Length: 296
Image (cartoon, rainbow, N blue to C red; front, top):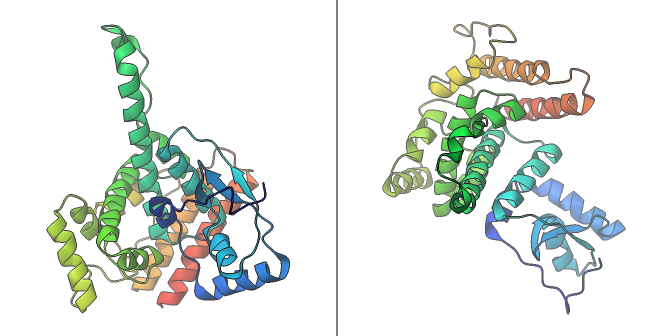
């Protein structure tokens, strides 16, 4: 439907907006020129009046007073919206490896909240002993591991990573975005430790980054030495062992790891001839290569 400022208010939700990776300045300017020339053709997506897709188009429309259409979607909860945004972004954007991990972790947290809320609603209807006879469903980490072609352990570690990055973002949104974009490197081990740390630990980290005294325990491109690397190795058991990276340069180790991840994603597809799945894996691989190119 056509947007009418007198009848409809677009609500900006900070939590939803922070899920969206910002466009690079050159890309944003290109989008702006395209919309000025051709208008805003794709509708903005709303949920209960809240904008959940089209933030850049909306920003440009407000700057230049451009008309636009909207479409409303229905979801039973905020967590369902979060999952939709995550899947929408993963299918549309070239994301960094850290962004992929962050989104997987957020997806895990959202799924867990949905399950907890559902159990709470159904608790008063259960008959004593009935749950003992119900078939057990797969764990959240197992289900998401199958969806993302990684191990359940990796999903759980991604959840820890997401917890730490969200906590950093509450103090400094700028540092959070630098971590996700790859401009700032914090090792997986440090992020996992922060996930179970205190607010003071997060504040100290932000302070060190801001005053330039922060030192990552592992340089960009170096082979991980924490448990997350072990989880990555576990995903290779069905596709063959990884190469020995002991004598490699840091960038060679990262390239090898990226290639192993790409092979794992492709080979573990439920349908080998699924061109859409292969294209998605290729898009992720190309994005990781681009980021490595910038680091070298």
